[in-house]
Length: 392
Image (cartoon, rainbow, N blue to C red; front, side):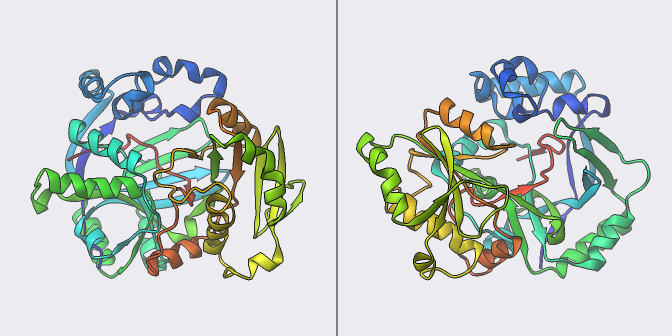
C-alpha cells in the first residue's frame, strides 16, 4: 500500500520556464566553459552553485532573486500533476505525487542501488542549507492498465505548462486538483504494494536523514515522487572511468584482459557479456570468455557482477565503488567521442562503456534486496529539475 498525498510547491513561470529548466548538458562541450553566464537564470544556479565556484548561501540568494523577478511562483493549492514527455513521437506519461517517507522505511519504495558517501554528503549540505527539494525522485510501478488509462484520460488539449528542451523533448504538465481526481489516485495507489525507485537513491536516503536530523514532524516527511508505468521505462548505457592506474599495471593491462575476454572491434550491436573499453587512444570490445560466464547467472545483474569481479576488483583492486576515488561514473553521453573527451578532461586512463540492463533486472534486484553498484542504471526520459520545487 503506497501512501500518497497532493502537495504545494514553487513552479517556474510559463513565459520563463525554458531558461529556468536548462541544464549543463543542454550546451555543446565547447560552450561549457561559460556555464555561469548560460545558466544564471536556471534552477542550477540555485541547486548547484558550486558549478560556478559559488556556495549554497549564494544559491539561497539566487532563489530570492529569481522569485522576486518572477521566474518562480508559489503554487499554494495542493495538487497532483501529470507529467508527459514526448520524444520522436513516443510518449512517457506519469504522475507527480508526494509519498510519505514511511513507504521507504517499510519497503513499499524498493531500491536497487548502493549510494556514494561523497554524493550523500553534498545532498545533506544542500538540504540543510537551502531547505528545498528541486527534483522528485523518479520511480515506476508494474504495469497497471486501469491506473495508466485513468491518468491518460485526464490530459486535455491545453496543458497547464509546456516547454521544449535542447535534447528534442517536449514536456507537458497538467494540474490535478479536483477532489475526484485526488481521491481516485489516493485509492488507486493504496492498491499498489511496490514502487520501484529508478533514480534518486541518494536524494531519498538523505531526505530521510535530514528529516531525522531536523526532527521534522510526520506531517512534513513527504518526498516528491514522479511515477511512470514500467512499460514506459527506457534504460540507457552508463560508463565508468578509471584513473590513477599504476604504469606497470597499465603496461600489463592488455595481457590481463586477454586472459579473461575475447577481444574484437566494437560494433553498434550490443552483446550480453561484452564491455567496450577505451584506452591508449582506441576502442575494443571485450567479451567475457565462455568458461568464465558459467560462474554467473544469465541476467543483467550478473553482467554487472562479472565486471566488478573480473575487472574492477581482481585487476584494479577497486573493492568499494562507493568510496574509491579512482572510479568515476559518466552519463548523458551521446556517443563514444564524448567518453573519449571525458577521459582526457578527467585525466583518466580508460573508459568502460556498459550496455543497458533490463527493467525486469531492476525489479529482480529490488525484490530480492540485492543492491547493485552505484550508477548501474540510467533511466530515461527524466523530468526536468526545477519544475516542482518543494520545501523541506
